[in-house]
Structure formats: structure tokens, C-alpha cells
Length: 168
Image 1 (cartoon, one colour):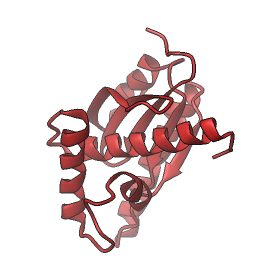
Image 2: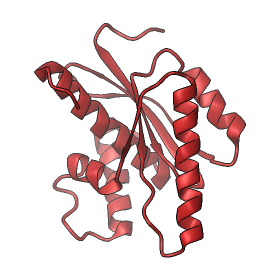
Image 3: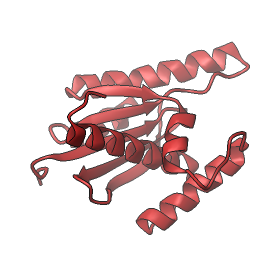
Image 4: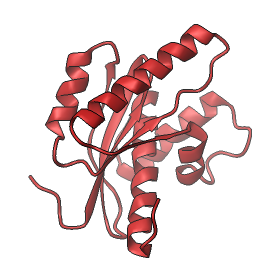
């Protein structure tokens, strides 16, 4: 199945040892459609590449969550490597990618559900509740919920920029 003319198809990736991913489509000012979601261990390169191949030629953009800087330098380095693996997979299939911090997409999508200084667990719960309310699907996996929010924020931002004729 191909994309509609002018349709934006975005994959959001919550890059972590268990990476959540979500593919959403945005057409003009219409509500986003959730096309696929899931989570996988980031040490399973085969699954990462299969996901990329499954969406080859249909994705407009990949948006990858920038890992939060951990207290432990080794953990930070590992998370950066995982984000790099996802960048490689997306680049390999010819998809432009961007990196966003969690608080960037959360401010764009979870407005009214979280406030400045909201703790991590409350942000994760807000993301799951938002996905349930917006798409009518129950998501218990916080990595999936984050990936969905990340993809929606990017789709909205890029769709608006395209309509306004501005570069993002």
C-alpha cells in the first residue's frame, strides 16, 4: 500500500536497550493514523533491519529520541550506541532522520497532562494515557507510548512546516 500524495509517514524510535517504535501517518490537517507499534531488544540487529526494510520507500522521516544523560558514563555510551544503530538502519534505507530530546516531544504532545518538573514516572503514565485517549489503543509498554508520542510530534511539526512553506 502506498502513501497518499502529500502524506507524511514518520517512524518514532525510543532508543534504549528495549527500543519502542511507532509508525504514524499524517495527511494535511487530519488526525494522525497509527500504522504500527512495538518494542524490541536493541541488541537484535536482525529485527531492527527487518523493521527498516518493511518500511523502505514509505517513510518520510525517522525521529529518534536522544538518550537521557545517565549518571553512569558507560550507560550513557551504550544508549548513544543504540541511537547510532537506529540512525544507521534508517540511513541504510534512505530515510532522513532527526534526533529529539524527550522533553521536546513531551511539551508538544502532552500539553495539559504534565507540567514543568513532572517526574519521570508521571510523564510515562501521561504518555500511555494520551495514546489511549488519542488513538483508542491500550498501551502498557512505556517505550511504545514514548515512540508514538515522538512520532506524532514530528509528524505535526513537519506537516505544519510543509503547509507553511518553511524548513524544519
